[in-house]
Length: 353
Image (cartoon, rainbow, N blue to C red):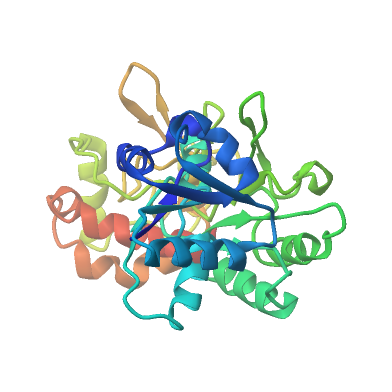
């Protein structure tokens, strides 16, 4: 039996199942650097270490010992199915019969990095920038498609001492498609623990990135909160409708609202910039999403729209009006249809922000 064991990014993050498999194994095979992390678990066992680039030899050794009736643990860092040993093993396994395999998942760099950065993951893509086995044209194609789809992107193996072009190419693609202010987080692993940094796409220093670094690039909705990256999922936060908002939407639904800039309003421009006042009171309030500039006033449980200019842009108003009439028929719909309203907001944020 071969167990392909993911030991996570470091010893402390190993799963209980991986721990038990290693304790029960007769033979443990892996890259020497990974085996050092679990030395306390391999005492009294046959331990076979091989270097980088010897993945096929490790697989053949695991199969050979398994066919002799041994319980074999084939060790992989992170998760063995994410650029790990599981893929290599199954590719070779087609040559043999009667070899049983079980993959033991581990914490991969994407989720480990995300946990240190805050809560940045929503729908995401993981892309390796190593062009040792993958043509750079494929790396560029995947990066472009992921960027265009507005996926969170996690880059593995971003930059080696002599392998710098893939990262440069990927970075240029991102700069062409994503906003310069898009939040970006990096986590660099080392003997003294992880080095965590949060910056923007424009300010990301490629020179500080190496093979031990994982890069996480946010999307349209990712924002920073107290130094952490957050990508909201769009949850509905219940909140009573303010009387002034009720009055405003009574007039709006009756066709008595003001479209465009309300120059006769004594507060114009209330956000200190030329603005479209069609939605003086936001139909999504409180969105609870800081990606457009709003924020919670701490400890008062009040959502402030002071920093949000998005709702007052002409293209935003046009996008919202295209579907709002299908959702808003009376004042109660501001709350009853809040989930659908927030989905409309996400749609329009993507196309207008």
